[in-house]
Structure formats: C-alpha cells, structure tokens
Image 1 (tube, rainbow over the protein chains, first blue to last red):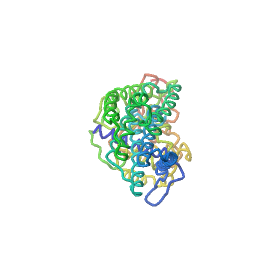
Image 2: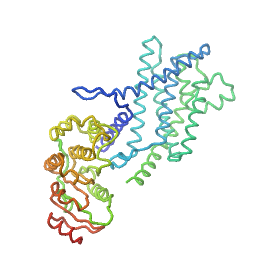
Image 3: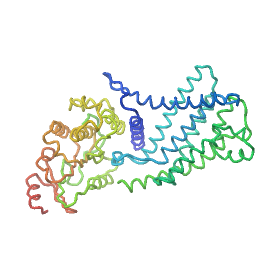
Image 4: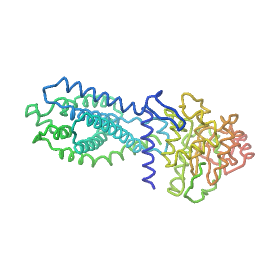
Length: 259
Length: 203
C-alpha cells in the first residue's frame, strides 16, 4: 500500500514535469479533452537537434568511416546522459511543490529521472523506426542494453556529483565545463580507435567510451580488444551502492530545510 | 467528496472529531501550527487514517499547469480515477468547465483558492488541514459550493487555522472553535464563547 502511494506520487510528478515543460499555445481542444502537442514538440525538437548534428557530422566526415546508424545513437545517448547529469545534479523544487508535505525529495528526484528516461526512450523509438524505414539494419538488443546502462550510469553519476556540487554555483558551472569536455573524450566525435595508444589507455577509464563503442560493434563488425561493456556494468554497480544512502542524505536535508 | 470507499476506522482523535477552526489571537502568526498538528496526528494514526496535506494560497494548486492538469495531477497522486473526480467536481460546480484550461496567471486569487479548495475537498481524506483564510469566499459563488462539499464530508474532519477577525465568515464553514494564544489552547467551544474570548483576549 505504501509502495503504491509512492509510485502514484512519482507518476503524478512525472506527468507534471512533462506538462510543465511543454510549450503553451500548442494544445488541441475537443469534446473529450485537450491533447497537448507541446509534449510531443518537446521530444520532436530533441530529435531534430540529434538528427541534424548527426547528419552534419557524418556528411562532413565522409570518408572517415563514420556511419549514421550508430553515430545518431552516440549523440542521442550523449544528450540523454548530459540531460540527466545536468537536471539531477542541480534540482530546484518549485515552492508550491516544496510546500506540499506529501511530496518527498525522492519522489521529485525519481520523477525527473523517469521523465528524462521515458522522453529519450520515445526519441529512440522514433529514430529507430525512421532508420529501419530507410532500410538501415540495427541491432536492437545492443541499443537497449546501451540505453539502459547509459540511464543507470547517468543516475548513479548524478547522485554522487549532486552531493558535491549541490547549491554551489561555482562548482555547478565547473561541472558544466566538465560535461562539455566529456563529450570530446567519450568516443562520439573522435573515435577512440584513431587515437594514439597513450591516449587510449587513459580514455578507456571513461565508462561512456565503452557504451558508445559497444553500439558501433554490430554495425562495423569491428570488436576492439580494449572495449568491454562489462567495465561500465562494474563501475555502475560500484557507484550504485552509494545511491540509496546519498538519496537518503538528500531526503534528510530536504525534510530539515523545508518542513 | 468523490464517492470512493475510505478503508479506515471512523476517526475520533482526542476531543476533535469534527470540523474545527483554530483562531490564533497570538501576536505572531504560527504558520507551522497545522503542520505540527498534522504530523502529531500522523504519527499517532499512521496507516489507519488518511490525512490531507496542509493547504494555503501558495500550494492549493500547482500554478504552472492548468486546472484540468491539476485535477489529473491530484488524481494520479492519490490513485483516484480522474474522470470520477472531474465528474464529481463538475456536478458540484458546473462553472468549473470555463476554468479547466486556465493557469494561475489568468485567475484571481479568490478563483484560484476557491477552485483549489473544491479540488482539495473532493479527494477523500479523514482529515483536511486548511491554512488559508476562508473569509475571502464570504461573498463569492464559491461559498455555497464549499459549504455543500463540507456538509457531504461525512466521516471527515476539517481543521482550519485562521486569524480571529474573520470569525463571522468562518462560522459558515465550521461550528466548533478553539482559541489559541501562543502555546495556550482553549477547549472546543461554540461561536458565542469564542467571540467572548476573542473580545476579552483571555483564555
């Protein structure tokens, strides 16, 4: 019963977060109710950005072997990771939500995560359907594993970083810089395979490199010896042990500060 | 209240057990009073009774989504069917249809709080905690609707926290009063005794 109550709270907040972010003036009203195109648009604009960047890069880098059928997913996973990392490391709970004693910090945190994960899952479905429609061959199990792992790793990463940078403006700004840098060392724009060995030895410590290279494997047929998706699993499993205690710390701070 | 079964015992907490207004004659308003009271009740009856959140003009509804979305939010939140909730609200307050697609920015405070209170009271609870002044509804279309919903709330208790100056309007919503002066609390008294105490400002 208690679990049901918490699940209901998370569902309600997830829907609220979708509605809050949807553009006004895009609602279609009929006798049955209102259909919000704003929610669809918020997903569509991400697809346009991801598809646009992927096409520009893959066309611009023609001859370098980059292929759209994994490159677009590399970008999608990157946007997904950075969206979770940004939104969950610096959570601002609106006053009207904060003043609702039935809503816990954990509800809002999980709802934010669920909202981003479902939004990008929807984006992934649209991208995959479109690519398959154009005759591209995809490995859906690889994509699902990569997406799930990327989501869980992003959640674990965010909760640890949030504990360090929460409400510290300078550190939040530094984290934004770090994320921009991380894009260039996650084997998205620059594939790890073309880098010198001493750089490779450093970059393989980055779990995102393994996710991004993992989705390239079934397309290119090239399996790099230094790429191991289980490395990301292990790192995520280790960090995940901190997740519950850290969320509990946040919850205590929230209860102390707002109740 | 929307017609859904509340799986709990009939409440009777201390001397309360009915609609009551706390009239605070202290020099400083104690905004956390109802929260403390709710927490106390919650600890004593956890899992047995349903306690609504403490509402005021800031949290009665969510301002950045529409009234319809708010109804959907609170239905999801409390695990109630949103169509049932909307039907109940519409039956009590047919005018709500004109407000359903509006957000806080396009409504007056009275409209916002009035609709918010109707939505709040329509969700089945054993205890409701209202921290917003009900005086503002005295000459509005919301007063008879709110009174009607309160009358239908059999098995529920409404606890109101207010300044004493609105007692003549609050009496339309509740019949019992408790006068609070800092940490001193009177017993449950009727309207006439409450007026006497307020006029003498003694407990």
